[in-house]
Image 1 (cartoon, rainbow, N blue to C red):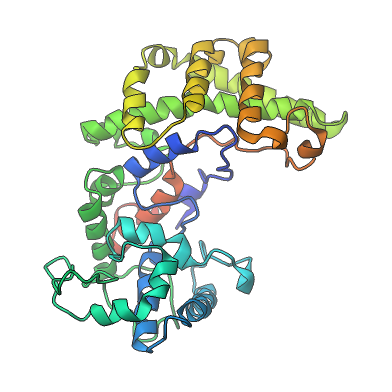
Image 2 (cartoon, rainbow, N blue to C red; image 1 turned 30 degrees about the vertical axis):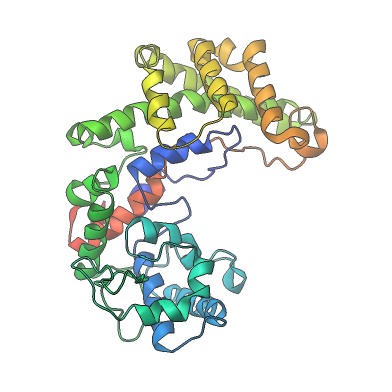
Length: 390
């Protein structure tokens, strides 16, 4: 059952204020191999199973992309006939699906060391025949090639596909499959929160990873990552809400503008109340340590650094007026949007504002927690307990 995490589902992950590099750094530390568009854990097996079948059918490199697409549409149809259709990729788009499961999960398969070929999916297709011919040599205990350094595309100990696959496919992980995915996570990302939870997690029912009921049990380095990621998410949430309030105020006069401005002002008031209770943590936040953690792993532009720092210096959570109507705070957001989008900026641009849907990038950053939680639920269910019925 997925209701436990669906209550906290990320509905809008757009990055309107240019925080994506920072957000993804923390998401990769906490939940490597995941993405916001992944849905169910068994796709991590469906994709390599499909490619192995195409090799067994002697599909050539010039035809593998088209055949793979055909097989993935076939898989979607089979999943839609199963008892559990939550998370079927292409459920709505049908045969017009643009991002196939193999593309959605490609990076994650590499991160978890299920995919051993290091290149892109397009490169894999280009060398498809050679790679699978080279895959027949000797391997070490972890499935790596010992045959002259040639690349084996898939982990050797991948559980076998059901005889009828993709016919009769469903999302229920069998025990050996769940153990395999848990082992791959722990082998490839043993220092991550994902690995801790796959081994020791008792539930995934929490709105954010820092609100997890087992947080006190997390290792110290994960506690440190969560400390910084929580403060960033909480403090910068107000910037997203104020940006949307400013957009709403530029709508033509009428009920829609009234409703949108009222909503965002109320949400900002709630945010101020919440963050006042966090004022001590925010005032003692060692942002130099935060920036060191981020900049060791990714490049953050000077403009992004200055934007985040200036927002923290303004501390708009100190009063409702500062959060909603302070001229300097508003100018900071206006300048930031112009810096990021140039002529496409919505503020002060009625034509660009026409494309606004009324709420853009307003969800608090959760670092892919929802996607990770769904995957954890599937694995725990396959292992026979814990949060399988949370």
